[in-house]
Image (cartoon, rainbow, N blue to C red; front, side):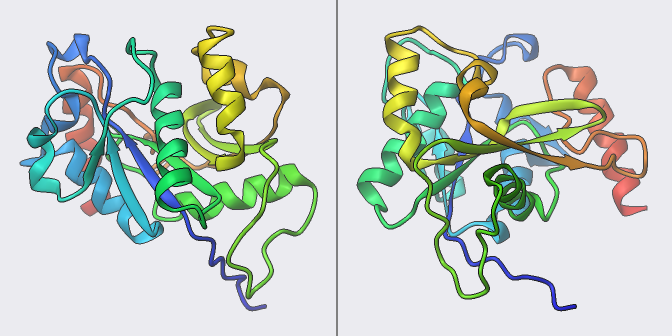
Length: 229
């Protein structure tokens, strides 16, 4: 049976707005893993899966100039967390790429993202929608804003790694600013949420390991060696 090809156009929003207290402050995504910035690992993993990428970060954008991507600051003030970064991506797509209906949110401290991440998020959204949304020649999967998807591994969900319809942006802004909702899990409570479950790397390591401390960098080095040897 021929594998179904998905032609959905999508923008990846690389979330680099965390304050990185456990790493001593600064931009965690610029920490080195195998002599490359964590952000470089993330970009290399995601670039083949999407049509466009932007970096969501506040402050001087020049510190990301080597990566050649547009840097977009939060559209709301106050360092309100990843939901603010996701909203920023939704607003950017609405104004700059109105033909695109979906974004994928990606943390910039997770260097082992699977090569089929985006595809499987869409398939999880399709299951949540309860219908076959991906015809072979289809280039859009319309949504009225009530469908989303996230990933899971080793029995744990990772809501920051998610698929979001641009149609949800007004409700997200309202929840964030008027209801003071900061947690992604609370925002998605009333949505049809698909969950894409991923196997561990080599049976043991989390493919969504995020680097929060120097010890996590040591663990990431170990996993990187597992992947290639």
